[in-house]
Image 1 (spheres, rainbow, N blue to C red):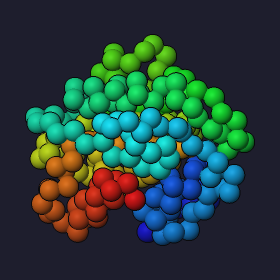
Image 2: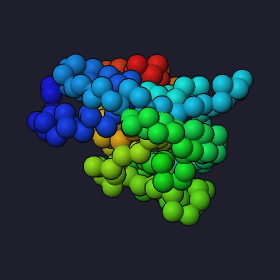
Image 3: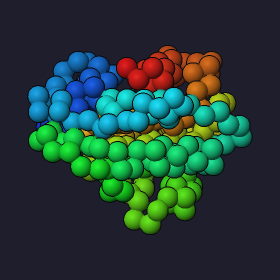
Length: 213
């Protein structure tokens, strides 16, 4: 079902690189969302070194980190998000206007579904880092968005998978990224046994995130 606010997001699609927009369009909007042609120029130059956490400068990157016993906060994901930030900060970033400059702190958004994870990220990252919930960043954007899902495999709390994998929440989080959206999560979530058709849809969404497509 296409969300009622498709007109709003069609306007916002002008800010997303086509690789980000394609994921959002196919996953949420039945292929009806289009990126502005100028946005294809946007990119981030990644290191290309063996063992780099981020191996491409546009689109969706899944950064899997296994952990146990976490529901609303994961130190493992905080450490990974910080490492990704430290790897990317200062890398050349080309805007849709063709201008190239180094990535700075304000070029990153760090997003989490739970306030406990937000606080942990704030404590680990430099002062003035843009850290918050999905709701806080609705309407904002940045070249790089790093989304932490927090929950360990099988540890989804009272709100279940429907909270961390809520389609609208994932939509907003990913569509904040002008160039690159990095999703940090326990990859074993994909092994969850679906208890309903809706959970099957949510797990399919998660699998699309893990594949970056």
